[in-house]
Image (cartoon, rainbow, N blue to C red; front, side, top):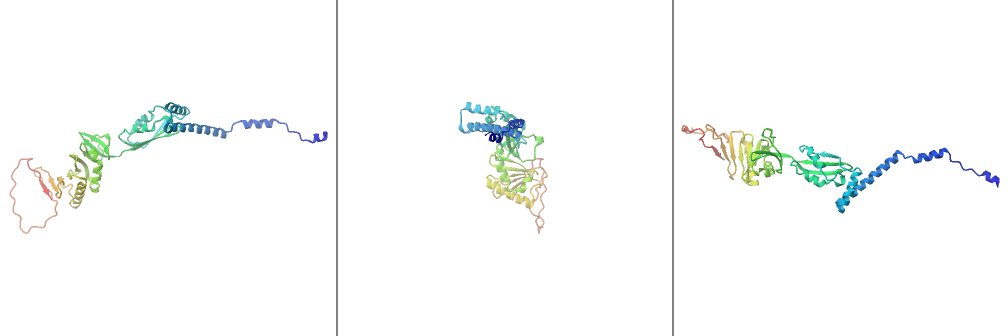
Length: 316
């Protein structure tokens, strides 16, 4: 029995190596610490998502939703930064003031729709998108309006877009190179004017502006000084402008000294020249062949007082 007992292997005593092994296993590794932190952030993010869902979908009582939102804010999900995109003419300071003007800085409690509606009060802003980027940033994406004309009304000038929205006042000495529309309701018909001039694209570069007359029709003004009176009705005005463009291309009506072209009467084209003494009617017809017989002598002009010469007109 003693021999068998002596032949059994003895258990190895636990020495310093085993103690050191236990000590190494107890110390946290960098990877484990990173995983623990990520897990904590994921847990907090889930709390934030639950708070947002409770406020927006489940309609939990306001006190409970506010408590969840404030708890997320204390955990680090609070509004600290605002990122602005697409703002060129809108002052960024105004956007910052609106974005940070919240009832609570906790990200789940930031009212995105209310912030968007306050931004839309600016004339320059056509649309705005407001979104959260966790943990602490509010992203504001601005879509600005495009100025298309200058509106003159009651002695004031304003920059407007195609929808007639007033964007900003304009100073006379710093007017941009845009068409000038005149009249109390002209701003509401800017898009109609753009559609109308599309019928004669070659006239757009020489068009200086337009006046909305009587709430019914347009008078177009050109850079060379002439005025074209168009008829009422969208279709009639479009056809008249297209005809005028063809006539100008064939015989260059603009820049020849005329004052006004009137196409309001169907089938007639009336031209008025300056009523200044000594002015002449420019020729718009092709040169005629010489006459077989000499024309009778014209009587000498009688004297008239300056400024009393009536307008000279031609009807085609």
